[in-house]
Image (cartoon, rainbow, N blue to C red; front, side, top):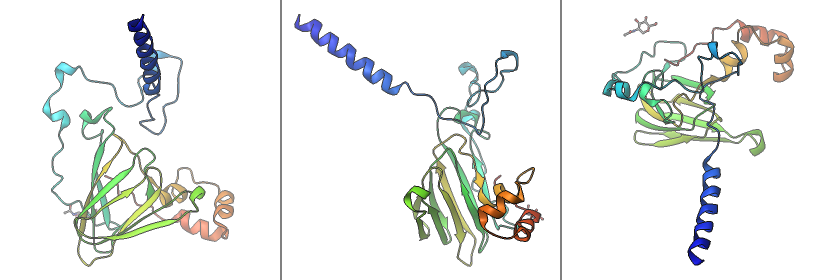
Length: 226
Ligand SMILES: *[C@@H]1O[C@H](CO)[C@@H](O)[C@H](O)[C@H]1NC(C)=O
């Protein structure tokens, strides 16, 4: 009798724990629209899996992250990613990495990662970094000046940036909590979309004249993500 009671308790606990872990996976790309026709059902949340018997070391390898990226561009920065596109073995593992190079006064402009928190370590140079909390928390700006060896965290989804405030090149590496964290560069998304967002929307949103929006929409919005 006593034994069967314990068994029932164990089974109930097991069910509770089991259901607590049975959640849906987070989105692994921007869109994954459902279709009814399985013939065209070639897109999944994430990527298809290779036959495990065919897996080799190269599926888990990326090389060249010791080589500085080319920072000769309008922003003076370049982000080189080691994500699931470059390392197929990252599929389903919820992690990736970037190398970020900065020219003197180079900027990684305000952007968000819709699917990943970022933890950044500075190897060389001096970076002024920051993120802004959501409306709910009063859009508080959180900033720090980072030196070699400093580690800083940018929480998932929040707008953040890094500016090289030193007179030399800077380099940082960052881990991201997604195989495909995604990047939304704020200026490029709002003023460089295809087709452009209606001027009526942007003049009201930014509370400026139409000519200011026209000017911004005419600019070339460089993408520093490799
Ligand atoms: C870096 O990029 C610039 C602009 O695209 C190009 O002119 C230059 O040759 C590149 N430098 C190297 C070392 O690849």
